Length: 198
Ligand code: NI
Image: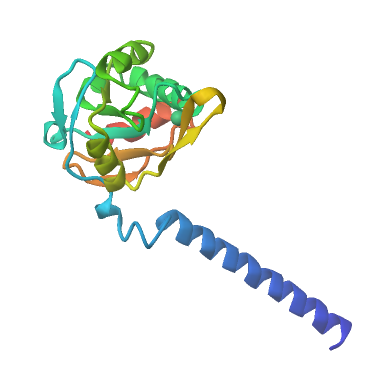
């Protein structure tokens, strides 16, 4: 190959590689795990849990309003409090409309997160949050239906922490998964995005 042909070939190869990467990213975004998440419609499902006041909450109670779902735990050192703070800012920006949107914080640590524990923890955030807990089997089931990864990780001294998926799920009025909800933007923009689903 002449030098010119070689260069053209390299440019073309680089272009193809770029295209491949882009395609890979798109696939990843659309289907984070095609084996586990065959379609968006398969995310979410029926649940029966208890909120921070001891009231039973089921997916049916949320029908008719869009809602956000976030899985976490009260002992989480950083990701959960940061996300709850960001979501609180968004809910604050919604003003009275916030009353028409559900916001669920479902624990991945039912062992420690009792309703009382959740109530105390959530008092630092927007009052719209419903903190949900339940017996380990009920939590495992709801986590599975949302394709949430959760794993107990032992710490020194007998303590433990939880690894978990930190995605925020936006569900529409019919309880159907819409998309992951992005809070890494101005709260007013995120609030405007939510209003579209009212
Ligand atoms: Ni967390």
